[in-house]
Image 1 (tube, rainbow, N blue to C red):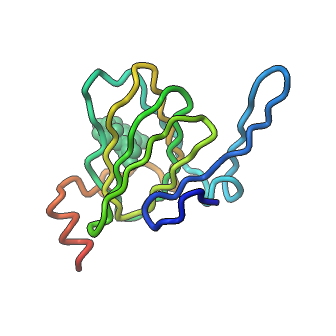
Image 2 (tube, helix red, strand yellow):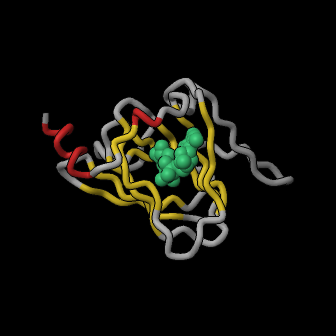
Length: 138
Ligand code: T46
């Protein structure tokens, strides 16, 4: 599943079902996506110099894909940090729970689509970094 075998950055390569008309990627829950998909959202029109994220989730798995453009994702599990560029519609990043995430360097055209294992729940967010570190260590 992963082309970089570390605990933090887990990249999923989606097969492109292209033909001479162009390309198509199909994402299915519990198949190419390793969970049932309960929610999809996408981030676009990000203003120059803006970074997003800066939180962790207590119990949420997500796959992030830049379907257009690119951005840089930083992941932090409280012990180590890793970065990855999302720069292809065939490249998904699996983000597990209790991982601090930040999204940086959005290209002007970036459309970042995220598939999530749970419905939106603000109480699942840890938005304070010191609080995140405390919860990871406990
Ligand atoms: C994540 C990263 C990768 C909703 O009402 N429903 C939703 O499903 C989402 C995702 C957000 N919202 C509201 C909550 C805020 O008022 O939209 C607003 C912006 O959300 P937030 O500031 O959390 O956005 P990001 O870009 O910092 O983080 C998002 C996701 O929230 C988060 O789960 O992992 O993208």
